[in-house]
Image 1: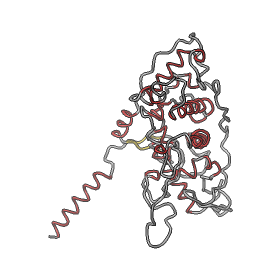
Image 2: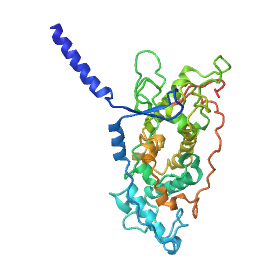
Image 3: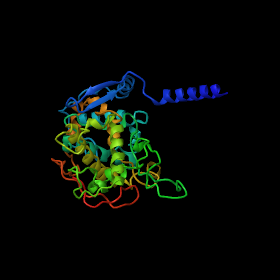
Image 4: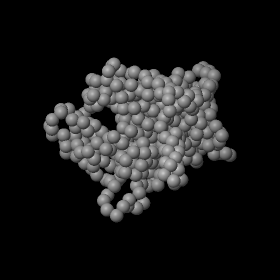
Length: 374
């Protein structure tokens, strides 16, 4: 009997290990100084699957730049009015393939109505997303460089991008008889299924998160006025886990583990990531949150909030979206600033500033602090 129980236990353990532990081979790539653990781990099967999922569609033939202005042919052209007629049609055709290949043009243009009609909310949103795309390519080069983005970077042939997020409404009831779970210990995909705060995105990546301090490490080994708590560190760790999963990398992709806080010892990708955080906050605040009243109820979250972006919206589990392949070079029309009525945008910050204080406690917010760490 004991032997039978042991065999059953061993079989259960073996099956669990089979679906839990990553099997060899695991390849490592050194990304920094030798001897400090700046190494990334990749499994060939995972990389192969990611490569298959990140294929770039074939570019449409370039348009005739000498055709007449689009505004002389079409009405109500508010963003791409600086393009020629041929360029305009080419971009519209590409957008249809990138966003609504099954629905076609009628996803944004109501059937039986003039093309100038704004009766469908999808057209209003698409216009704003065009402005956002141009903003990113023009003003956020500290993060996207010359690679840039297109509609396909996020949408991948779907009307709604796969990797969007809403504010977590929290548990519908208490987790136990005593205590307050404080928004954590309920494994959530946003926190990598860890026992960390389940929604690190709302406090740090929404428009109101611009002053939320992410860094919690001190500059010195001994106490020096840093009032950040372990609870606050858990919120930061939750966000870092989310970013790690979004890019398919580990902590040492940006940080030197001997001194997580030190910028001089960190990888250059940390500076790019910092600009990415600022960019995501700006996009959520300037483009997505203002569309709250435009989206119908079925497109909103459980708390009635609009869909928002984070790192995974573009990266989709890869360290560079689409493995670094640039589609912008084939669609330079999306790299122009503004348009006929393009929205004015502020340029991206040029340098990494000191962090601000954390937000006050609340729903899906990290606990408050005294003096923030630098």
